[in-house]
Image (cartoon, rainbow, N blue to C red):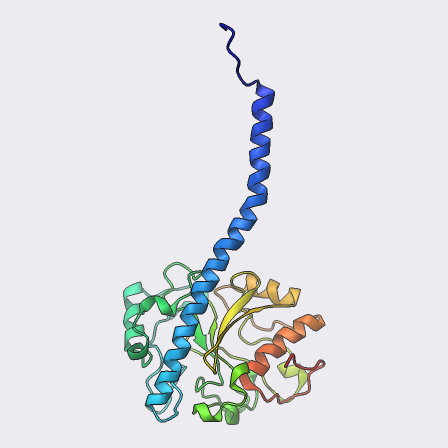
Length: 275
């Protein structure tokens, strides 16, 4: 071999093992960093959408934009048009061109004229809208006990001045996909009827999700309960329904959503709300 030195097979295997070990250590950190970057983009989107929502109210004499495209609001143009496929519950999608047209047909478009603002970068490929408006924010005009959500017709806010404790009230939530309804939350007069999620918990950016709040702020909420996180991960892009809290932390997650949506609870929960 003319006196040349080379790596032995054992040395090569040791080097490969070290590289594999380093990759196993670094990959989770890289994933977290990438997801944190997506979270920042998502929160910026929600910041601009919420600001546009406030501008709309300023221009329209304190009225809140229609947050529900699937039901009649007495002639109010919804924030976005019909962007969902008829088989959305099975994962169906409209062509991107139709979804983009629906965004531009909405009453939010004059105030937020950038298509990318309407979707989280973690969104499903081909989904142009991942954000939803909460029921209480001039959204689904439900009568008493519709779908078991509770007697909450009097808690639907039509004007910003009606919103109690705006710093705690969610307007936009990163639900993950678009449906005919707003983001629905139970609030009946019994624990049995209210003690479960209607729309599923949304798990994005690491066991939580992002919100746009009525005072213009944005917030990332990390869920506390293991049942909340598990259910949210399993229910991605379809409606599981009937998800019930098991532990106190699960209950605090549910109460956070109920309180942030309605503020006034029509039942007495087993634990005090987190705020």
